[in-house]
Image 1 (cartoon, helix red, strand yellow):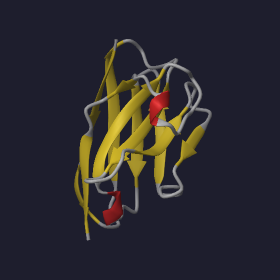
Image 2 (cartoon, rainbow, N blue to C red; image 1 turned 120 degrees about the vertical axis):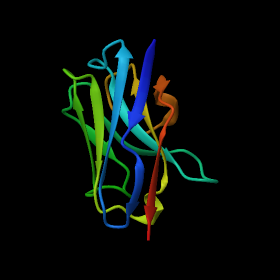
Image 3 (cartoon, rainbow, N blue to C red; image 1 turned 180 degrees about the horizontal axis):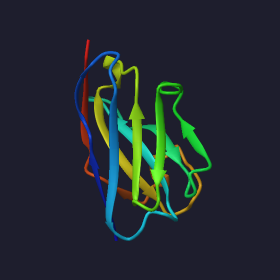
Image 4 (spheres, rainbow, N blue to C red; image 1 turned 90 degrees about the vertical axis):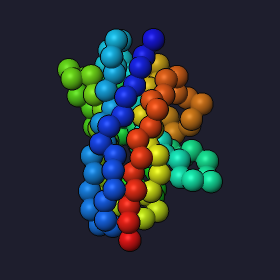
Length: 124
């Protein structure tokens, strides 16, 4: 079983930055692809970014390209999401997810394990 725990959320002004982290206890993440998703109030959960098992391939939603960067440290068993130039529309609960298949996927159904989420609020 893989347990994922997100951290790093908080309140930030528009234009600011936050770095989210996702860590696991138990099974190593090194063979999994990892993704970040977000869900704003009243909206469906949506894809943000993903990274393959080796870190050599990434994928981003158009809305965050050029502002967000996903990375992983397999030795540390962590995945991070660096978020720059934040906008009020980035406000959401952000979820980390793990995918047994090692390739990236933008689809919720492609992920096997989920964290509980961390709140990100961007004020205008």
